[in-house]
Amino acid sequence: MGFSAQLTEEDTQETAGRIQEPVIAKANPTEIGPTTVGEDPEYPVITMDWILQDPEHVGLTFNHLEWQPRERDYESQNGSDPEVKNQMKRLLHVLQRVTTVEKDDIRSHLNSSYAGDSLDEIWDSVRSTVNGLVTKFGNFDRDFEIKIVGNDYNGGNLQFPRYPSFVRVVGEDPALSFNDYEKKQNAKYMQLQQETPDSDDEFGDDDVEFDPEQF
Image (tube, rainbow, N blue to C red; front, side, top):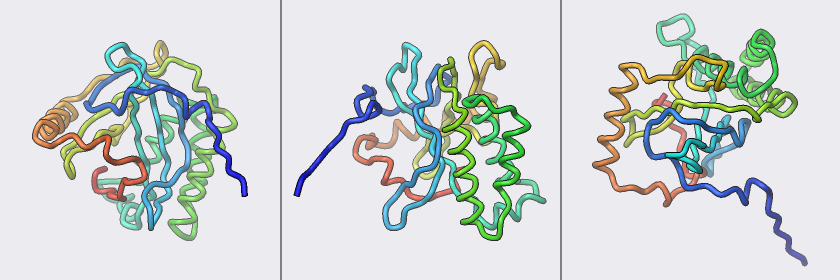
């Protein structure tokens, strides 16, 4: 019986740990596509991994996850809190910038993906669509800037905002900024971090539990 181990380019890319504060910073995407998190059960998600490039945060990483919609999310489409449409807008916003596909074509692909006989079927289709667009038409060789916001849910989280704009192509898109609500949430997050021991290095991405309420 033989054994083998292989290093990929991603394995040998040096990082300085995870970002620990809300920030607007230059960054490059390292992976955008389907993956799973957690163990027994595993949850299918769309991951958006970035490595920061500005001098104050160079080498720090950031990860944003998109989770499978729930039945009540679809029911909210005719209400005041359209969670599924918000997710579609986030995906459209990112894909429009990290691929060469036109906005109308991305929207058409997403609209087709977010319809099906079951939530599992829909989410498989969405993840496949994102993977296909990024694999075939991805364009990561640009200068990006991203906005990372904090919240005080369940001990505090860092993520992309619920609504665009949070990814900018430098020189093409308007500058990013925190609105008043985001500034308040960022302050709450930072206050929590001062009160909570740092345990970031103790757990990896596979220890993330499905908790869509944070969005």
